Image (cartoon, rainbow, N blue to C red; front, side, top):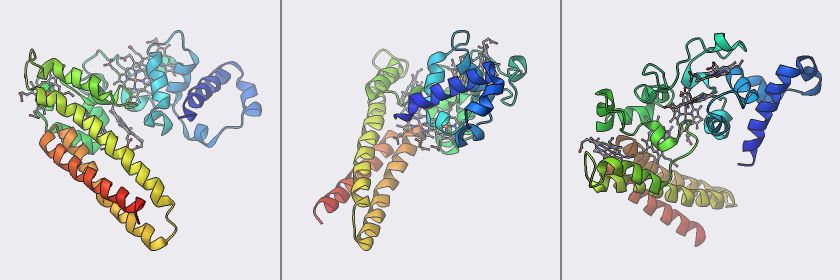
Length: 263
Ligand code: HEC
Ligand code: HEC
Ligand code: HEC
Ligand code: HEC
Ligand code: HEC
């Protein structure tokens, strides 16, 4: 978390230096490993021109997100040529998000994210929402509904419930409040079990005896499997399955923590 602002400032400053003091940069700033790996010029130019370019919040979110941290550049979602610093050339096949052919338009978005995240995409494709999206209903939830535009953050459980209730609440097109509630359960429940598992992991790391540690690791994995399955059920919007898996994950995690506390 503390590294977040550093990344964006670093990028902005680096880009400014490239722009203003091309000669100086090589002698002043020793490039870091991260900078050498990062071959996308999109972000550098966008950070260097914060007042003339759109979507500043989006840039900040990107630099904090798992994508920014793992050098998943702008072009991976927007298209364009990341190798050049020429704006027109870089933007050659970049379309605005409102254009239905843009890879970040709602119609295309699940497939765009799905090029790298096949599991969630395949699961999503089996849902009614996907069919509705394909038939032109653009209000249904897509990946960014829950993950934000750059996959940086999960919506708050209550916020998501409200969003789903716009269709599944009493006044909505497909009223069934259990569905909106199911979304809250998904986020709350998963976050909860994940926190407990993290606590367990820290305790396992401190176990001195190798055999006991290995046994606990095994138990940890047994608890994590149903959590991963719950996540998959969530991406399919099959909440019965989700609840069942989550309950199993919760019970196994509780048993693991109990064993760690009372050896
Ligand atoms: C040399 C600077 C520069 C580079 C390099 C650059 N951009 Fe831009 N970008 C801009 C500016 C300035 C704007 C706003 C004016 C415009 O649309 O041209 C912009 C606008 C955009 C928009 C909004 C387009 C719209 O129609 O609403 C997107 C999306 C975008 N850039 C993505 C990218 C991607 C992806 C790359 C890399 C492949 C990239 N940019 C490279 C400067 C740059
Ligand atoms: C993980 C995918 C992803 C990445 C990576 C990403 N974006 Fe976006 N971007 C989106 C989505 C989704 C939208 C929202 C489109 C909409 O308004 O529906 C968006 C919107 C935008 C917009 C607003 C204008 C438009 O086209 O709608 C700009 C400008 C933009 N992004 C630039 C960038 C830049 C610059 C980077 C790199 C620093 C970047 N994006 C990285 C997915 C991404
Ligand atoms: C070019 C490949 C690529 C694209 C396109 C892409 N991602 Fe990612 N995504 C990654 C990588 C790499 C990571 C970081 C490594 C990891 O956690 O798997 C990541 C991480 C994530 C994470 C965090 C995963 C975790 O385990 O914490 C989420 C959530 C996510 N992406 C959602 C999205 C969404 C939503 C979109 C579309 C808007 C998208 N991604 C588009 C490559 C991509
Ligand atoms: C209804 C909300 C919701 C929607 C819609 C959604 N996700 Fe997720 N996603 C989640 C939750 C909750 C998690 C689990 C987070 C955790 O484990 O802490 C998750 C986890 C992930 C992860 C990391 C773990 C994994 O399974 O790989 C990725 C990547 C991801 N989602 C991508 C996507 C993509 C791509 C889409 C669209 C096809 C999508 N998500 C749609 C809620 C959603
Ligand atoms: C724009 C309207 C709309 C929004 C927003 C919406 N849904 Fe739906 N959803 C529908 C429609 C329409 C159906 C299909 C008709 C039905 O099953 O009653 C559906 C079906 C479902 C189903 C049944 C499973 C399936 O694939 O058949 C679940 C579960 C569900 N939605 C959950 C959610 C959740 C969770 C959210 C919020 C992340 C959400 N919905 C947001 C319109 C919406």
